[in-house]
Image (tube, rainbow, N blue to C red; front, side):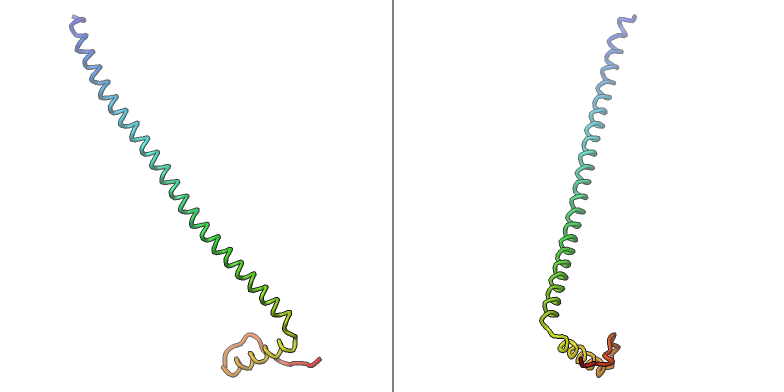
Length: 114
């Protein structure tokens, strides 16, 4: 009687094995795809953030270079202009703002000849 049931038990075991194997392969492939796309998404996000940061760095560098150039120009101009001309320019600017009735931060109170 055992021998007669053996093929049926064996057939059930083979059927269960096929179902389990197909489910296992599906879960395995699905897992690999999820991990692959997850890593691809992380790489994409990090790349985009890196590009954004590099653009900000380039803008900061350009701004710093402009400020350095401006300070160099101001230094060159300050070296070329005598002090009495600078005082006259400041006085003229102050007089202009005084006539405009604006709140000017600087005021010439006294100009002393040396």
